[in-house]
Length: 51
Image (spheres, rainbow, N blue to C red):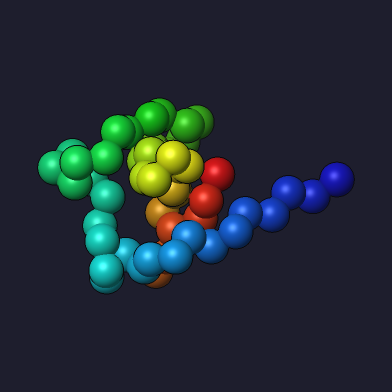
């Protein structure tokens, strides 16, 4: 079984999640997800994946 993640609607150049971005941070294994508009974003290259 494989899992795919949809690409979020914004790129890391449009908005960069981090300590001061205003979104809730959630630790997720080896990375941090950020809650954005009711779903979680995780950085992936030059964009965010939705979790």
